Image 1 (cartoon, rainbow over the protein chains, first blue to last red):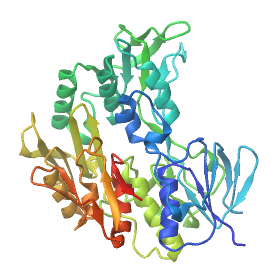
Image 2 (cartoon, rainbow over the protein chains, first blue to last red; image 1 turned 60 degrees about the vertical axis):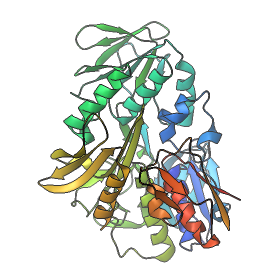
Image 3 (tube, chains in turn green, yellow; image 1 turned 90 degrees about the horizontal axis):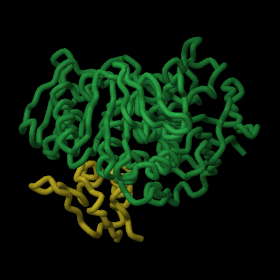
Image 4 (spheres, each protein chain N blue to C red; image 1 turned 135 degrees about the vertical axis):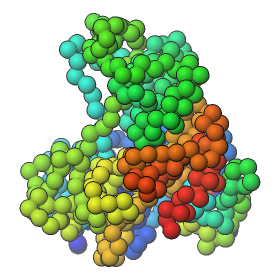
Length: 392
Length: 63
């Protein structure tokens, strides 16, 4: 029997890769190994609708499993700890060795955590996994004083949800406005105003220097010498790629898994591995739609786009066209629903092109005068028009 | 025939589904989602693609 395709990472990217392999005609064995005990589930609601509900359960976020992938061997609750790309094997923490014909790396990210002088843990939360959300949901009781460190999308969404649940919420972040990158000062500033109108407080250009409390957090110390009372401390300061298991191989994992324009893992010694592929937000890849700079793109549609490309490439043996996805993201904060297409993060300027800032509006994003993205609050048909333009 | 159901309490009218299955899903003049409750079997793969890309995971095929 031929060796299976092994997928490391059993989240959305892993599931979509398995589905794509079948859809494009691969009939051999597939093994998917993931460190969480849960079958693949959808992460975005964990900072939004699901966190806002009465309880958080796997059922509410589980992806539907299809007949085509019923025979995938799921190895859950087991972490891959090492890989030997020369001999085409990966090894789990239990010591089990899996040989592969093709290896798909879809291990994703984990939240960064600060290390404080008083590095206590009770009252501290991150948000990435279902287990994280379950723990946080229990803590978000009305009247609790919540401090969110970080004003990116996950921080702002989580803050909005905590506020809706009746918590007293403050966002602390070093930047000048929340979500400045990728949205730009004007739209980001408006989103801050809308959050503030709902009662979320912002301490921008500030950071947390220490935690205060003996067994449980009671306050956080800020860099201006002040203290902020705190029962629930949420760290939302970005993510780190899960690539440690690849240490020691001829591979570039300096900032995520470096892949070429066909999503093959790049060798440090030159060239790339023809049977090692990257999928999802763990991958740093060039996108010829914009330039040849390899970037990590932490948008929800990227794992699925990678998976489609890699599944097709393995099943058909074809990689004629380079991988050049159109990034897209959305965000829900209170009754504000943002939708964007393109790579806003590389823009050097933006302008309001429709609507007004205090209502529904659309912004265009430019790099050196060239349109690279668009984002809107409401005005869906207009924003969808940009997708058609970008996809040509 | 397949039967399609969208949980309108979840749907935020992002319109991703429209790109995958334009014969089933559309945004109306008010930018709100409208969809046909049934479709030919040949639409199944398009509707499954729409299910996959829905940010709210609000679309279901009722078998």
